[in-house]
Length: 253
Image (cartoon, helix red, strand yellow):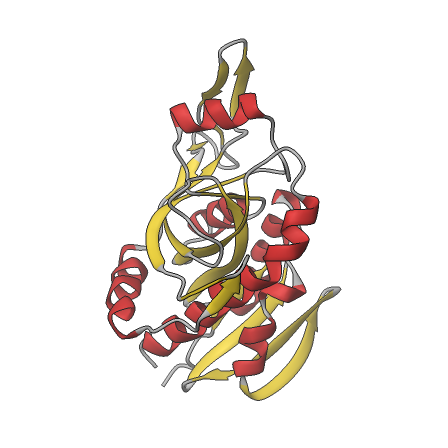
C-alpha cells in the first residue's frame, strides 16, 4: 500500500500557525532547504505545517518547495487579512471562493485593468484569480455544520465569529489608499485583503495540488493598518487556525 500523503498547511506568520502546531500529535520538526517545518497528526491525519513569510514571493517560494518535496494531497492556507467588506467582523473566517491577484494587470487612469499573463509553459497563460479545489470546498461546507467557534472579545464586545464563504484578494501591499479601495470595491468586491494566498493558489494549481484558502479578518482595510493589525491580528490568527484544525479533522484519513 502506498504511503499516505500529508496535508500541507501554510501560514505567513508564526502567529498564524501556533494553534495548529499545538494541535499536532506525535509532533516532530524538520528543515527543507533553509525553511523549518513541523510534522505530526491531527485527528489521525498526517500534517506538515510551515511558515512562508510575508508577501507573494515568499508565499510562492515556500509553497513550490514544499509541494515539490512532500507531494501533499492537499494544501491549506490559514491566516489573517484585513476586513475589506463591512460584513466581515474581526475573527470571521472566510473560505475563499475566488482568490485574486489584485495588482495583476495594468494600472491606468481609471484604475486597474485585470488580465492574464504569459505562463511558464509554452503557449500557456496564467490567470489573475484562482478557485479552490471543488472537493475541498464541499468538505469545508460540510464541516461548517459541526463547527462551534470559541468566543472572542473585541473592543468590548464578546461574540462567536462566523465561518463563511467569500472572496480573498492578495498582493504585496500591506495598506492601500482610499482610491485603491474604491477601485477594488467596484471591480472585485473582495471580503478580505492579504499578501500571500493568490500566489500560493497559483503555485498549487500549476503543480496540480488541490488547495483551499482560509483567512480570518483582523483590522479594516486602510492605508496605515499597523497599529490596528498588531491589536487584532492575533485574535484573527487564532480564529482561522481553530477552524483549520476542525477542517483537517473532517478530511479522509
